[in-house]
Length: 169
Image: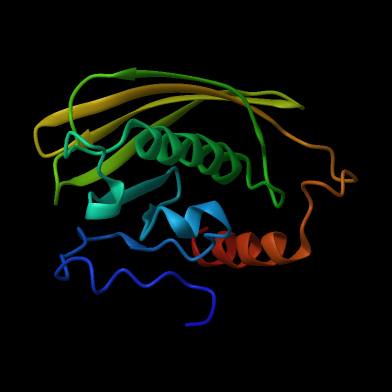
């Protein structure tokens, strides 16, 4: 597929847990750290990925920057999903606590809870978990942009999100 990063030569195929599908709205940076998967339900949007060679730090465990990036996206999508927002919601503040290591081949998965949303802010927290339990705890605050702010209101993003909302009422 044009524009997609192909990781098939790096690792053997691994099964993705039930309910997770390709993270089809990945753009830019999200495509580079993938492949990523998500699981959508009425009340939640979770992300997951297998720890592959390109995710490893020199200690041969998942790089903290990868885990923080996935957690940042999980907070954003949880809030966007929760309030059915058709625009991108940028991060204002994130906090992370490393609890354990993501090992090569591990499946890491987010569990994100939206704490509160206001007219202009979204607050969420969660845990990234691997085969040996939690590896990262995170909290995030997002800006909920105005509908007229062109920096965050991409018609392409809005169309994709609307389709997802329609498919997952």
